[in-house]
Image 1 (cartoon, rainbow, N blue to C red):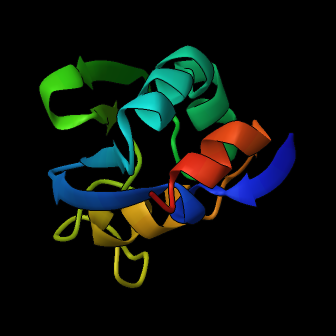
Image 2: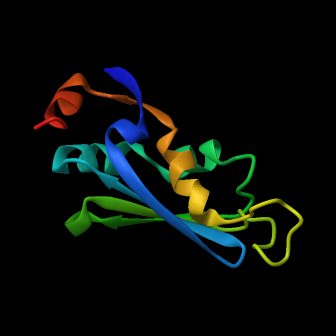
Length: 114
């Protein structure tokens, strides 16, 4: 096992709609996707975003894309037009999730280079 940032095994896209954000994580390989399905839980994402996400989180599995999609409710302080928070946009939440560290089996890390 090695502790790595998600950015070493996945890519992300994110955006905002009102007061919520949408974060998609796409694994680099089918094996890494399966590992993320089993280990990148709603609870882990909620803990990672504990300082900004005050609502529920939903997770959707997209196996045909090797991706997980997370909806973070109440994560933008009212949204871009209703908050005093500078730059309250969900576009940065994908990068923020890619900075999360996870323990990844060495064999999966070796397979990402293939």
